[in-house]
Amino acid sequence: MIDIRRRLKYLVCAVVRICGGWCLNQRIRLCVFVMSLMCAFFTILVLASASYYVCKRSLRECAATLGVHSPPDYSPSQRIVHAHSAQNESMAKKITSLEEKLNNFEVRYRVKPVTYNFPKETAPYPPGYSEEAMNMIHNLTGTRVLNGLQPRYIHRMQLPFLVQILTHLLNDPFSLWPLYHLSGARHYMDFVIGIPTVKRDKQTYLFTTLTYLIKALSAEDKRSVVIVILVGEPDVTYILKLARQIEIMFPREISDGVIEILAPSPAYYPELEDLCPTLGDSPKRAMWRTKQNLDNIYLMAYAISKGVYYLMLEDDVTTKKDFLPEMKGYIKTTTEKTPHWIFIEFCQVGAIGKVFRTRDLLPFVTYSQIFYSNMPIDWLLESYLADRVCSIDKKSLCPAAAKKYKRLEKKSCAESKLRVRPRYKVSLFQHIGVYSSLQGKIQKVQDPQFGKVQSYFPHQNPPAQKITTTIEDYYQHSIQNAYEGIDFFWGKKPKKGDTLEFWYGRPLQIKRVTFRSGNAEHITDQFYNTVVEVLPAFGDNNFTTILHFDEFGLADGDVEEEFSLVKAIRLRVNADSKYWVILSEIYIQTPDEKKT
Image (cartoon, rainbow, N blue to C red; front, side, top):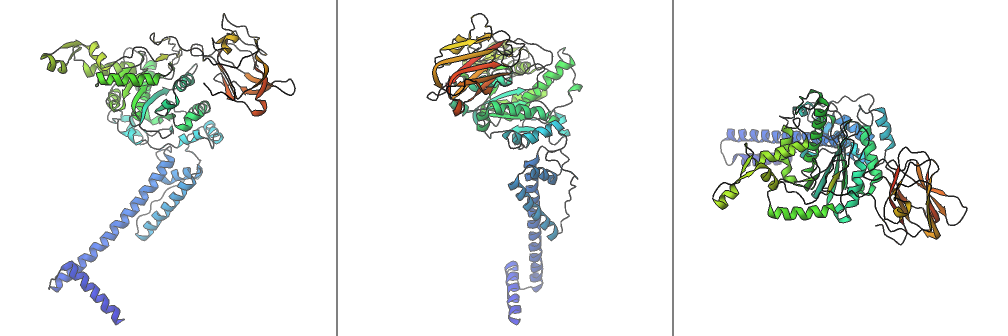
């Protein structure tokens, strides 16, 4: 015991000598010793507090990661409950561990505990979803589409938004958090293709647009592109239905991250009923174009950190084949000649086919926020150019010319805008939408430089011994020409029981079949309530159904091995149609052939 006391005395003396030096004054030694103890105590207290708040912050980050879709009044623990119900087991364990550490700090260091009020009944997703949406969520359990309901916060989204102008964003701390975000985690792509879409009154053109885009992209092009579809609707049920349809039509593009789906929070939009109409437009039209501007602003702000170039499109366009290599080549040559271009036009209709460098998007996004309720998006583009290169009297002064020629050279505003807005020799995109997203508006706006829209997709099919149909064809658009890839088949209103049959002289081994109805010019001329059947080479003489035409007029799929050896293929109509029908693609693929 005496030895322990002696060692403790030596230890204290050593600490005092180190802290106080070789001072001979005993009082000074005592003061230094007390100050050392106080410093040690405060150091321990600071470390404990820092650990407590780090743990608390980690808890909130985990909760935010798993429940950013929750209402703003939800506490972090309530969002954790959502994470548990969504079966995020690994993250739930991490959260539980953080909660235990947090409670230990509260008890050990007497920190005021943080109490959360849990709801009596907690749904797996935040309240506010309709019963239809909840049923759809239940039915989609296990699909990739459902991942979009738990989006991660997009940090870059905060940068371009001026809350001093869009003051309504301050009303909700989650106003810039996406309501839905199905992302493939692609970054720094060569091109970001932005397509805003909304629910249309008559018919949708989005799937036609996506079909043309995907068909026009090669495998190499797809590795350098991300297509972002912004759904400007607050209805979660509609968003999920649309996302599921896109996933069914383009499963590989969704899984590879080529297609992303994004939907802003309803809190992102202001009260559109309070707008002051401008340009002599009706309140209805002013609300429509303002909403359209806000959708484009959100989409461009998201694209800033996604790639090098941003291509502005709409949801009702078609494109020429191999448009991307043409764009890349023209951008390269234009940049060498005119390095300070603002955007390049690959279509002269509205806001279609405009290419920005993403580094130049921020000024235009900011400009659009200031005047988003004043004019439509295509007018904003023109106004932005005029403000950049034209003087007040619509003349431009060119300092570069002054240096070269030692004088100021005046040029017209139009010529100055053309210098920073180069135009490609032909249009690569064509507007096909007849029914506008503005309810009741019909628009037949097309770019004359685009040329004729491709109306059918030819293939080299196996020789057929006999091709027949009970549907009356129109003019020279026969089924024989469609099968041989010469033209498309166009028939008058099919009736129940009508058929198209393809007979082969000897048994044919098939791997996959594709029948596409309708085209860009006649979207409604599709097969409705129609099936694809095959007659097996062996067995009874009964046709077997292998495919159905979907709501987009497409029947496409692999043929099961037991039905792959056939004598004939037949299309059979099961109900009368009020439209004519176009068969724009027929492709019978055999095992020894790669899809063209």
